[in-house]
Image (cartoon, rainbow, N blue to C red; front, side, top):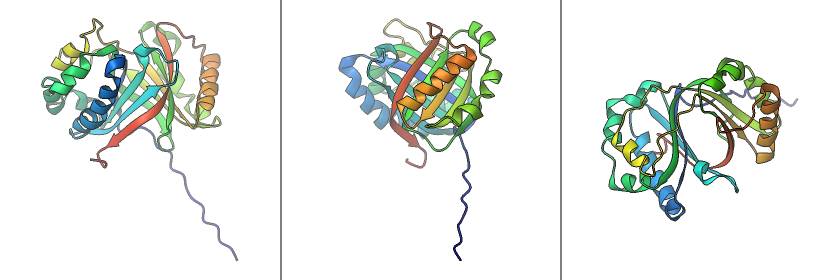
Length: 241
């Protein structure tokens, strides 16, 4: 008699209940240095702080606008982690390397978000992000409505995860030293009202999922709804440290 063991697949999602999401670009002549800095200094520094759980960096596919070329995310236990004494200490005392890199950063977009819904199997190498920039967008694309689609989206072929984020334009917006350097190129942080993150096995699956969302939720790309596709470069968690 042959016994077949049944494995239960536990669906998880983002770690913790809050994330800090960043989109932006870096001057071309500083790109190699930027990647070195983010992987070797910035992520380890952040993840070592209390409440930080995991750091993530992805780079845009060929043809991505330089202003949106990179996507970064820090997962945390709760929103308060991003205004903690330890974190603010780092924000107000940036290293020399941090000052140099952030001085060459372009089109920064940085927002602290609550994780409204999150479902995934592991962490995929390919992602797509939809950013809703202004408050008016929320009337047409409410996060409560969008989160109801999470089960349908994650059943699509090749889609391994979806996360719904609600931005807070009042939380953690202090004028820190890092913020001053980040705006050196003349642009202040763009704050999102909400965002969707899709994970997939390939870009074709992500494109089909985005098309599904566009059709069923009447999402139209414009200056206030920005869609990008990325591949993962580096992930770092406390276990890695």
